Image: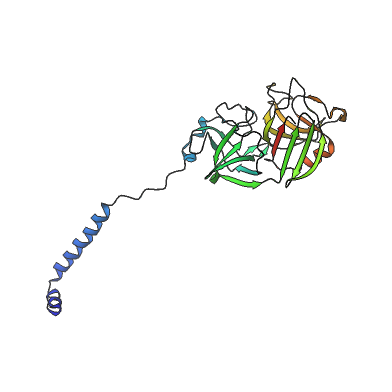
Length: 268
């Protein structure tokens, strides 16, 4: 039977063989066409957002829609992130964009991470009101770790600097006056301004927090900062507009602290 079938196929006319081959190819093509097309990977939400319509989160702006810090007394772990480009900020993972933040503030922008959720991080923001936060997609961020922590205790007028959880030093400092108090809660080192001609401090470390009673001072938007002071008699007193004035030896160490380092301010 197999030999008979082979002889029969061998005797088929060449045009018939070609026609059968063409029909077979058409069947394969039409069968594949009927299959559902493969979907392209979804475009990340961040790339679909019109950044022009979002307000910029900076030390000069107020973003009322920003989520409040849910745990203002919890010490962050030291993870800091840098946005490589202008990015939207969300009210929650896969949520609604409410603002944007860029790669520059006082130099490179580094933000303290307070929460992780899958491929999202919640960060503290430099804009008003104090305690503002937002969510960023991790894929667009550069990540690092700060070994340092700054703690300011208002009632005792003291500042502590930690490195790798070890106490580096404690200093008596000046804080905000009763009518212009230093705001409490957790914030971060937003940048470093170095100006040797500055009359009261050669180095100023702006924080991500602002005066709750002044809209502006010193020509700026009321940004709270760590800085030195020429008159040591102020240390131990509540006399500033909200900034924390520190001795020279404290300032020398604080200027080595990287941007994004968490700062905790409490009533202790």
